[in-house]
Image 1 (cartoon, one colour):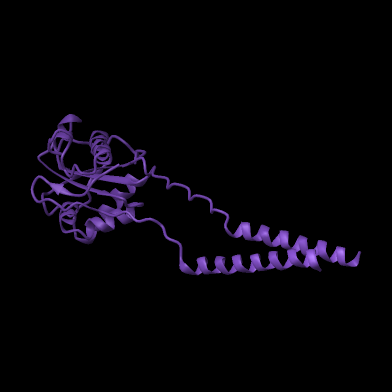
Image 2 (cartoon, rainbow, N blue to C red):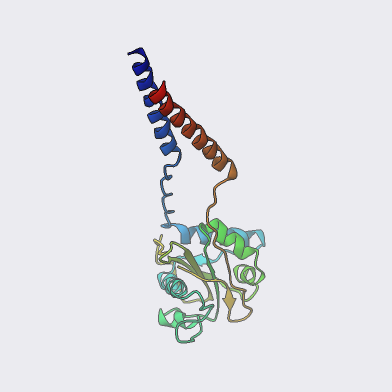
Length: 232
């Protein structure tokens, strides 16, 4: 009886070890998608912050027609990333401005894809000569900016900036929710090089080896407990 009780304890220990082993391999909960509601406004803020560092006046942001034009370009880019500063049918990106009733004297475009935050996309634009020229107004003396992002079926973000020089626009929105989609940078004068990256999250090696050690420990406990219960 004493031996049987001892065997039951060993079996229980083996079951607990297997449960702990299963827990070690439980899939982590998926990360919540970022809230993109204020991403466009934050990009505008960061752009003007960079311009201030270079002694440039801030760009006006908050015209619904200009932002709608940028949103259209973001959607087009998300639908077909090979269209760099070109619209479906081979039209220039600048035709979207007339389509949305935006008057302009000069215009430019920055696009990018894959960046997960306003900070990342603005940083990478500033690290690219062509995109930086647009942001800093070195291609033309822009005074307005429209911004949008779109998201494809795989959750990748596409960003679009439209810069214009215009004296017929006004701020008519306070804040605008973003739709995820966008592209890398070109101007009607100088153009930027397509930019953007996309990387997959990777686990660190330490966690893997710790889990592996736990696997062997759990298996050993289970095996020894089983034989102890049978032959104990």
